[in-house]
Amino acid sequence: MLGVVRRLVSQAFPQRLRPRPQAIQRRSASQAVNQMLQLQQMDMCADPPSRGLVVGVFADETDRNDAGVLTAAGWRYNVQKTAGRLLEVLRMSGPMPKRGEARLFFAIEPERIPYYSVVAVVGLGKECLGYNPYEVLDEQKEAIRRSVAAACRILAELDTDRIEVENCGHAESAAEGAALGIWLYQELRNPQNRIPVPSLDLYARKDEVCDLEGWRIGLQKAAAQNLTRQLQEMPSNLLTPTAFAQNVVEVLCKSGVNVEVKVEGWAESQSMHAFLAVGKASCEPPIFLELSYYGSCAEERPIVLVGQGVTYDAGGLCLKEKHELFHMRGDMTGAAVVVACCRAVAGLRLPVSTQDRNDISLNNNGCIVGPPFSS
Image (cartoon, rainbow, N blue to C red):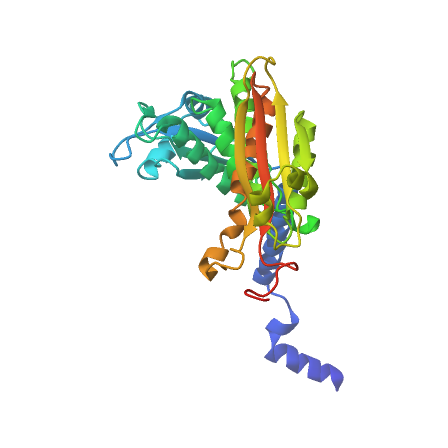
């Protein structure tokens, strides 16, 4: 009886009992595709860390039909590494990038695994840009700084491990813009959640004479500016006058700068009543910093820099408006700039002497102040 039932079922539903040749072929093809994807995934995991390259292009921003001219290093990379494909694709992508803009190209090299996974072409404006007396700046150097900074910021967001930057005609400006572009304030982040910052290198061939000294100077200038940004971005409830002084001692003493920290008692002995009155209502004691760098002979007069260092200015009893209080944590920028300038002078070993004075205090209604007009 069981055999009869099986024969009837096989006659009624033959496709359910016997697999068709098409299904076997489809299954084998699916297995082959899965194996190929697994191999590709293994190849991707075995790839070296991603690298980015930044090159410049000169073009007239007012002329949309300008074909653009690559810099010397960019032209060599275009001819030797991409066989002219970089410039061809750049012109096909539309008008040339303007100053401060970057255009990205992925896997532009003909190799299966390119050395540079992404190439950023930045706009540098016209080749004839120079010093502008009305703005008191060199427009060509400013264009290099802005454009390289924009490109490096974008490449850092793509999790690029290493960024190589060509000099764009001025290695110092390129290095300064690159280091400013990748900077992030992460001091208060969990170390496990901090965003990785790519390393920076100057793009040059082994047989090419490159401006390594200009690159080093640019990095020193950028490091000084980033120090100012770090002090500015630190919350004012953490950056008290004492904490500011501790940061200055930690940074400048390593650079060969003499740092003297004067406390409240010293200020009273010097009759610095106006300085003491600013932070009198606060629980945080004021600090007076004297920074000295000796890079010239004793007979030469030093350069004196003075910076305001009110870590937070709430206005005292005359409390500021809410929209003004939001920006008052930056009231110590003057002192931060003086500290950064002193670090840059020491890092570059300039043949000058500087004497810097910073008054660090906190102007808010703290534990000492009482109600106004109290008897």
